[in-house]
Structures are given as structure tokens and as C-alpha cells.
Image (cartoon, rainbow, N blue to C red; front, side):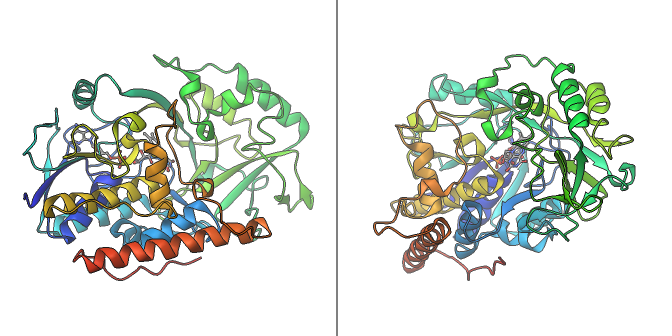
Length: 453
Ligand SMILES: Cc1cc2nc3c(=O)[nH]c(=O)nc-3n(C[C@H](O)[C@H](O)[C@H](O)COP(=O)(O)OP(=O)(O)OC[C@H]3O[C@@H](n4cnc5c(N)ncnc54)[C@H](O)[C@@H]3O)c2cc1C
């Protein structure tokens, strides 16, 4: 058996996989094309660079994100540990200082003697039997040459679609006579800022938004965007109230000046601990930069906003996993090749880390000649990999973790919150059994990580 493996891409999934495989005695060649060749959104050569929002989602026990993180904590996920160590305040969400996060992950990788981090662009994948196991974790912005080779290997099955990111503004350019702090859950908190609109301001803003000039993106196919990540102007075009009931929902955010909630609000989330930048929540857009400046300055409080980053559209690639992958993340036809992260069709940073974790364990199993076990379908990890590989999931859309993926309880439990908590606690029991099984077979799973509520 080979005691080594090749991982393509030192992003979220690839870095997690490399660290998990290495602690299980596998020698890993980790190929990363940055910094020599970058993507349109990465800025550094660091491993696990987070490219957009710095939030890894909720830590609350009764949410899907909270459940997935708790499972990762029981599995002793190296990247979750770094995220908790580099956490910045964001209410119940786990947000990180993105630079510190990526540089700590890079340090861990460089300090691991079993990992050889090689700065190279991989152009093709060798599927021949007998080659060492390989994990393709090259992400949504996989380089074109590698994508072409994947398409050739898997039979033109690659699918591309577009996604969008939201703009950020500088702290000292915000008018704090209008904007006020507070989140729906923590009215006294300072992790979020709110810009309140009157009805007249809202209607003027809505009209300007839908009329503004957009960047024409080649091959743009609106039906291939994530529903949860639609450009704000596309959402606005669905009707005058679409934003007021979506990202501009004012309920629960009382303006201290009036003592009641406004007609609509735009919410901003603090970007990073060390910079004074705020991200417009839910305002991913493909407006031209000049139009973003003009229209978004109509937001009360942002009249003089300086943009630290403009929103933009980007290409997002993933494979049709239900046709190609099995729940162990192996390609059916080439079981020595695994795919994880966004390219495998999961959606979200923590989902990328989770599939990377399972892929790292799978590489270790392949090297040892063991059968690869995926966690039970009662767990969030297990249900997520089943969801992306389920042959009924056609036409295929990428999947985030949701509590709806977990099977219902056999006994009916009263109350939504109680039902959710029961599902989560059952999933944690089940992942704990998985951890015990791994340990009993000689796999290394260090002690669980403490995770706050
Ligand atoms: C612009 C953008 C914004 C996003 N915003 C969010 C968000 O706000 N929240 C969220 O939860 N998710 C977001 N996502 C989705 C996704 O969670 C992230 O992209 C995440 O980083 C994907 O993790 P990954 O490990 O699959 O890929 P990545 O983290 O992108 O890692 C892939 C790595 O492979 C390298 N690579 C690519 N091709 C090659 C090659 N041929 N040879 C060697 N190396 C290669 C890349 O340089 C990169 O380092 C966003 C995606 C994009 C593109």
C-alpha cells in the first residue's frame, strides 16, 4: 500500500485533509498554485485563505451550522481549532480574522513534517490504477487547465455557474448620526451596524438599484445562482417589497432615535478585528463599480462611504456529484481519486472543511487498505455527503448543511426548538460512535475541541 497521497489545492478542504491525513501517518504532497498563479479573488499565497465574508456561520447548538461545527469539534478538526483561536466578535456567529486564520493554517502545514507543500499548478489528474490516492480540492475557482482535464476525465460533466460577493465600506466614512449598532439577537452588541430607511428613501433606493448598470457577465445564467446568494439587484427586481422582506428586513432592529423599527434597514457586519471595514450583509452585486458607488451611497449613513471592496460576480465550478461520486467522496469510476470542498458540490466554508476532513480520513484508509467508512446518515457530515451524492438530487444544486437533511425522529417531539435540539444531540451521539470506531481501528483522533455556544 502507498503511504503517501497527493492533494491538489491548499484551500479550506485541502488544508484540512492534509492535516488529518498527516496525523494518521500519511505523507502528503500538497500542491498549491498560489502565489505564482492566483485566482480572481485570492490575495495571498497563504493556505486556507478565506475569500469573502469572514463568518463561518452560527455556533448555536440548534442550528445546522452549530451542529456541523460540534461534529468537527468531536473529530478534533485542525481548521476549526484555528478558527476558534482566531475568532473575532460576531454575536453567535463564528467569525475569524481572515489573515490570522490563513497564516496560522499555513504555519501548521509548514510545521508538519509529513506534508510537503509544493507551489505548482496541477494541469491534469492521473487516474491509472496503482497511482497514489489523490484528492482534488481545487475549489470553485479551479484553474482552467485543470478544469479542462477534469472535464475530459469525467466526460464533460463539469458545470459552471456564477456567484456574487458583497461590498465593504470603511468605518470612518460612515455617518454615525444615522447608523446605529445592534443585532436582532443582541441589541446592545457592536458587531453589526444598521442603516435605517424611511419609506420614501427605500422606494428611491429600490428604483435606483433596479435601473443601475450591471457588468455583463459572459455565460451569465441567473437560474444557476444560489438562491441564498442572489445579487441584490436581481432580488430587488422581483418586486418593490422583496428586499424589505429579505436582506433589508427591519423587524427587531429598533432605531434608538425613534424607539421603533424603520421601514427598511441595511445591515453591516464588522469585517475583521484589525481593520475598520464593514461588509454590507446580503448585498452581493454585479453592478458596475461606479454604479455601486452611486447607488449604495443612497443608503442613509453611507452618503460618503469609501468602498474598501466592491461587490463582484465570480465563476464557481463544481462537478455533478450525484453522477460521479459516492458518499466516501471517491469517484465511482476511479476510486483512487477523491473530490472535496466546493468542487464536490458543497456550499459554505464549514462544509468545505467538513468534506476535507472526511477526505483526509479516506486517504488514510486507502493507504492502509481499509474500507472507507462515512459517518452515519444521522450525522450532519454523513447526511451532507449523502445529499451531494444522492442520485435523486437531479438537477444537481450544491448543498449547504441544513437540519432538514437529518432524518426525522421516530418519536414525535413537541415544539420546533425541542425537535431541532433532539436531532442535533442524536447526530452528536452518532458522530461520537464514529470517532470511537476510528480510534478502535488505530486512527488518530485527538481530544475533542471545546466549543462555545
Ligand atoms: C468569490 C467567492 C466568494 C465566496 N463567499 C463565500 C462566503 O462568503 N461564505 C461561504 O461560506 N462560502 C463562500 N464561498 C464558497 C466557498 O465556501 C469558498 O470558495 C471556499 O473557499 C471553498 O473551499 P475549497 O476548499 O473548496 O476551495 P478553496 O478554498 O478555493 O481552495 C482551492 C485551492 O486550490 C488552488 N488551486 C486551484 N486550481 C489549482 C491547480 N490547478 N493546481 C493547484 N492548486 C490549485 C486554489 O489556489 C485554492 O487555494 C465563496 C466562493 C467564492 C469563489
